[in-house]
Length: 175
Length: 243
Image 1 (cartoon, rainbow over the protein chains, first blue to last red):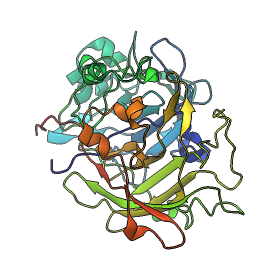
Image 2 (image 1 turned 90 degrees about the horizontal axis):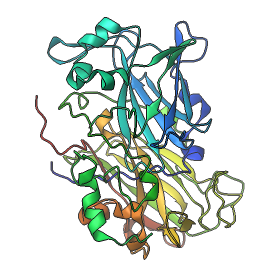
Image 3 (image 1 turned 135 degrees about the horizontal axis):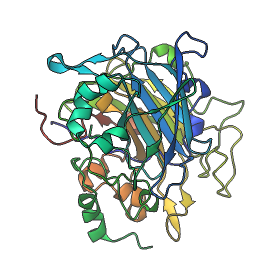
């Protein structure tokens, strides 16, 4: 690599007035047909909710296509560590070498105390056979770690809690 | 807590199962106390190539309004403080400009106070300063903000802790792996040696890439000082990719 990267630094505690707008958590407008809600709580290593985190998601559309003009959202966690997105369930994504990735949402966490983002992938509980063949999940192998990447059904959507460390730590990916 | 423990700074990353190169800080930097309960502890899952292939969101120029880059013109009057122009280029690690890319900034006012309900620093708010801006890079990856120089402010990390003056930057770049949130610092800040967030970057050369430089060529006579800050985005993981 020719040039050194600009290092990452924490987003700090005071980002919300600059970064978080209510509308940015709507990947699609509420009321869109087939809309789902994805929400969850971000916890620290002591099991306490983190109320000053920012969660960003990036996902494919319903046909499983990552499009530059669709699929990004951002939510704060000021509501007791809880983030919420209004979105559509993505389709399965065509991967390299003919592999098919199970429907998933890429999740990034930023927070005071996080010197760089933590990156994970959320999977869907109603996609058991697709999940079993997903190249990411099969590469992880460990069934307990895999289970922590699968959201829980919750009302009109899914619940995906994120544990930064300690018991039940969410598996995070190098990127 | 003492923050000048070089030994600690050099070794803490290795203990956390880090896979990154030296450009980015480790998740766990114990001198920055808030990392202790928030840093992931398990080794990161390394899937060569898999995430790098992911594209990223593209924000249209319609996302940004004409004056969003000028933080001195968002209110009826002018904010207090030293007016500055911050400009530079967003580049990838091969030196190619990253064009049409969203940059967001946020900062404290000239007195070192953020417009945020949690900030209790007893310094005055400025009714004419919000401290948030955004812009798109142009065809050459260039950007420009007009703002005031933020003040330093105290925080509770350790006794008599003060952050060096900084502007927060959020950059998307072109691809998922380009996503970067960082802080731009100012030249010759006496607080660098005492700041565990700045010091969390282990490589001194990488650290210095977060410091802007004074730029006489963008300084406007009788009006504002110029500072130059280039941002290099790209793949964080130094491990060679396997295809």
